[in-house]
Image 1 (cartoon, rainbow, N blue to C red):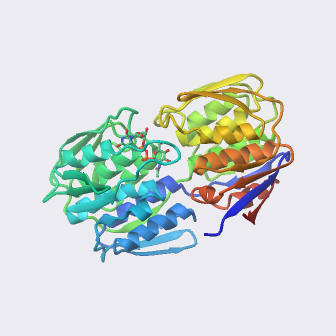
Image 2 (cartoon, rainbow, N blue to C red):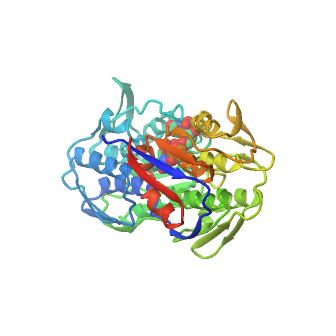
Image 3 (cartoon, rainbow, N blue to C red):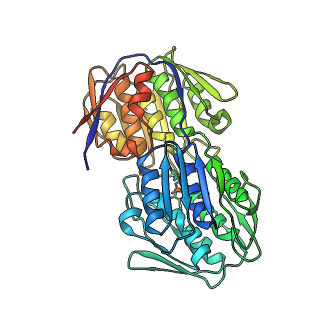
Length: 422
Ligand code: UD1
């Protein structure tokens, strides 16, 4: 694999307009829903990202036909023949586990590799297992795989409240499986993320009977079969939020268009508290970082609370606040690898358990840094935009998993950012 690095010459104020791409985290579950269809599923507004390609590869391994042209993707699942998601794919992209429910519903069997840990910490699967068992499946963990079997899935009451709140992935898996189960399923403690609500709507469009999308309790009445359909993916609230932070950290002014401001309320609220000027309109948000950044206290949580997927990026911003910020990530208490790298750029951050204390500094200075995961790399790019001199972000393939053409989009806002071979 060719290794790229991103170089940034910091200190340019970003100005202009940028459009949000479709949400990776809505597109991935939509692709797994296609596995349930007795037909072709067309998905529009899909971002061109490595994770999407990886999910496409997985669907092909499972026997589907997968095709992507521009931002339109087609999955024909009629020929699906395998029920095994191998380690080689799952270890690269944890969302592969979202095929567990669809495979079980379709084949009565599923073998999905255990994801193991990753650079953001432990990734347990107990809620997925509990969900499948509640629907009547036998589930075992054998030879590094989740092995699930059910002669027929039956609707039931499924409690998905976990130690860290709700789970996006477990909710998606249970929704998929329950759609083709016999009888009625009630999911308690469901995740309310917009991407989950979107998944429920897509299932409905395929003929599923789901009620309560976007709330804690979902009701699913199983049907005999689901059909393909045509869907368009919601905008990426995390990508959009990252561009707003790019405006803030460079003291610039950026309009993000094609987004859904109501999906981003906790992020907009945090930016406002940090003294960033934020204005939301129907489908766009303007952020201006004209005043000094103020320190804030912030805790991540399940939607609608502040997303863990924005934690690294706002950490970068708060490095330049006038005072001491405190940030706690209860969703992934080990998701702080970016901290060491930010310190290399001149940040003052100390970590105690799941909390970091960020003492604002007057400026950052460019240096080579190493990306460790998707959002961490975004944080390093943000820091680089504000740092004096040149910042090199190595292992940039992490960023290509989740940001479509980030250097092009940032260049169009006036950033000096480019890509080179490592
Ligand atoms: C999704 C997102 C990811 C985001 C995460 C949390 C996709 C493709 N990925 O991941 O970007 O960071 O939501 O918003 O949409 N948990 C358990 N047991 C389980 C499953 C999860 O305890 O069986 C815990 C997790 O460790 C975590 C919390 O529940 O603390 C939320 O995880 P979950 O919502 O499942 O994350 P993903 O669906 O993997």
